[in-house]
Image 1: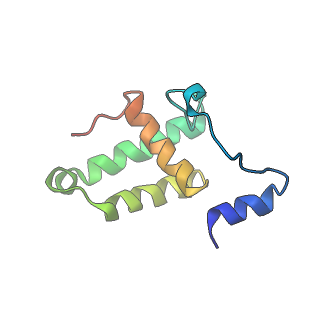
Image 2: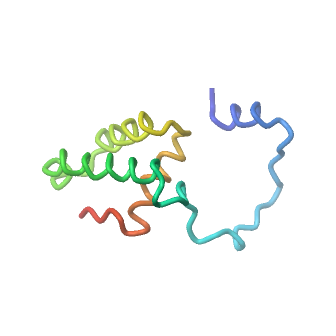
Image 3: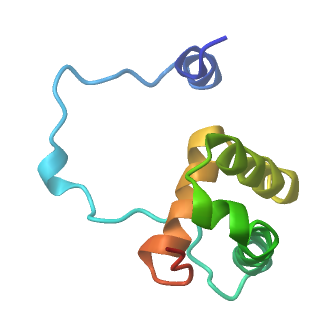
Length: 101
């Protein structure tokens, strides 16, 4: 089942607008706001350890399989929607906690 359909079933009162105004959106949205919290620190630890364990392969190639494996590990620690998992991983890059080149 498609996620939008699931979301609609969870919140049947919410309707999508005909037009969206993206000018007023924040430049960055965060999955975590408490950077001292267990979820933030635990996710950061998982990402760091994953990079350390896969450094050689990550330096050789961009791998969708590795990214999916990382998402799975993050989800096991802190279950959330797939888009939120990616947002949580990207947050660490955007705010400078992870800088892997």
